[in-house]
Image 1 (spheres, one colour):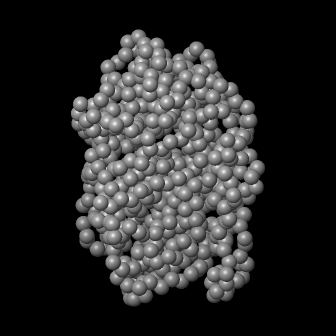
Image 2 (cartoon, helix red, strand yellow):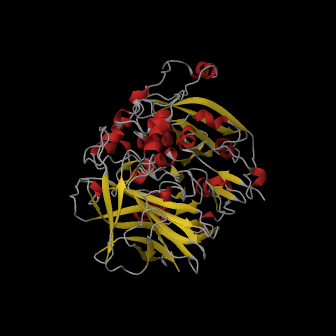
Image 3 (tube, rainbow, N blue to C red):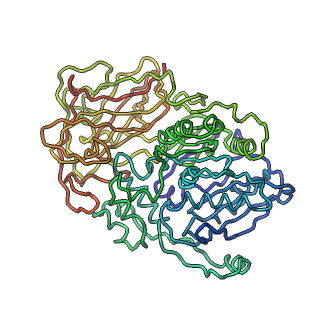
Length: 609
């Protein structure tokens, strides 16, 4: 049997820039990559002008025997377009299927001119790049876009402007386009992801290329130089503990970035408008194939985008051609599965899918007009973990979903897996609340996302983790859909955080995380205002735990972990009611979870009969 381990550390995700599409494991794969139809010629560092005169450096991959005008696949990246020059990249894969492929450094990055800001100008620059490509004599005027993470998000940003030449897109892991997922959740900054990303990729300063250098001279000289930043020798485990947050990067000598702004603005501040995110007023008009992962930070947001574009597309052609595929892997690792796919430590079976040929067929249909039946596939394809099988569906959430309440129960001692916390579909009557101490000095450590399914047993020995578990299941239960936890809470602090994690407990006691969420209590009535807590009063908080598709087999147990920290994935709430980002002192909070009839804290699971 073949085995491939999908194991991504925080630093590995960031240092690779999320989207290095080397193609490997072919000897082990059920679905090998498409056979090249032609040789490929690379024209390097073509400077493409934007509407304001700024020029963006673009590599063009041409099929050597291109003949007639061809469609173009555009990939725009902040992670250095030269990484696509290896012959195993998707740039060569698509060009080998007789597409012109354009890989472009975004504004202010590497060889491109202009000032860099995260996601800024991505909509307009993407529109202008499509326009320029469509005007070239070798283009048939049809453009598709492709890429994961940052490159997935900015496809969606640009699609809002509805360039008539944009004929199709494949945004992968682009969930940040909706709610900046991957950097924020529940009003809380994702510390580990964000800090490493800004250290590696966020610099607003770079060497400046002489504007009047002829392209031929630049290409000749470029091989002797590197514009890639040198990653400082930083212990992130030490860095993450430093306060105040806003000075974290500055204090270790990182060049200027948008870090300080990302830390210090409220979720609904108009400052965020410059970075682009999908608004209710946005309209689209492009067929889209969304790709994401259950063990990524935002699968629910990708599925919301899948629904949103069906609703907010202008033409029936676009409305009726929104598709999504959700794999059981980690961020941007869709093509990595083999016969035994290990995600973190969890074996999710044979999760292989014919991704590469699906990408090619999608573009063949929309950009070349080849009738290949790609639009006859199910609108939604999900991998059901636990059953370990792909399944086709037509909508999200599934129409057969039964949203079921699992009530938190205990005799007041749910602390740790050795406590008496249970999950039950029966509404409680009168029960004592559960209390735990949240000390920001000793937060609950992150185990799991974004590294896949990991055993939670050690985390569950802590007294500041409340553990609620069902009895052993006598029959299997499929959970496929959005997940939410509703808690009734009290705290000695004006403000604190509440976390929730869904766990699948196997018969041998190994407890794998499924998905999780967090909410900063000050935002419990919405992100547009801050409301404080008073000691002794009970408040409702709703924790968005994203989405999953997981089969809890007979003999397994369903578990919910509740606490107030998940560090370093999320920043610590210092419990003062202050800004957090500019503070160096904290308070210890005594937090309570209530679960009696009038304050019945519960987990809402989407059960598929």
